[in-house]
Image 1 (tube, protein in one colour):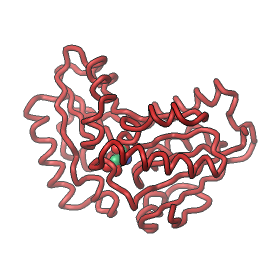
Image 2 (cartoon, protein in one colour; image 1 turned 180 degrees about the horizontal axis):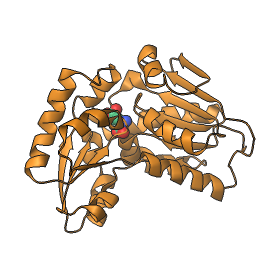
Image 3 (cartoon, rainbow, N blue to C red; image 1 turned 120 degrees about the vertical axis):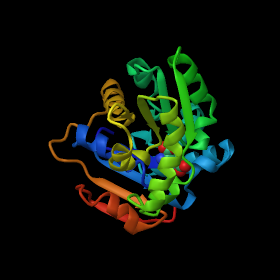
Image 4 (cartoon, rainbow, N blue to C red; image 1 turned 30 degrees about the vertical axis):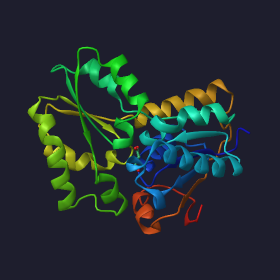
Length: 261
Ligand code: DGL
């Protein structure tokens, strides 16, 4: 059981940003990553459809013997994690926009949240905002089109710059000093965002916190891998293999392959 892999899924390549944090924190853990790129973006789908796809990914990972599942997708977490926790016995770790730390640290009391339509419309996102953002103005923007460009490998493109400019303008006009990245694809936009944002605006995402939470749950359940060797990292995509390989080109991975799951 302890040597079994951690299963990770996302609507595509974005969750690799979470995998990188997990791998850096727990190099002995083996991982199996599913990029459901054929069905991206999840953010434009109905809750029922997001739950259905999350079940499909979960069952695949459980069939492969995963000991814990990281839902490395804000949209799937905010729409489907309650269902998954109620219906499967393994522990699930989810990811949600980091509103709480941003709200605690904001001096202008105005925080921007960039996330998918599916995340921003979810009841979990609304309750988190209400619980943690007392006295804080939250400027939400749907990042429509961003996931599609990232899935196409067009991160550093003029189209991306134009979209981000459009999404950031109203937030900057309202005086945000924190920008919460509420989608696991978006950390790959940080180099471009840093060039576009004034110096006083901080960017925050939940990747590191998810890795720490994963470690803490594995410890609590006595599931940490005790081997002395480095874990094995396997990636499966039902979309464009070259794009996924590019996201992993600087990482030590055992296998990246196409699979129609
Ligand atoms: N990475 C997913 C997230 O964190 C992207 C969702 C989508 O496919 O629209 O929300």
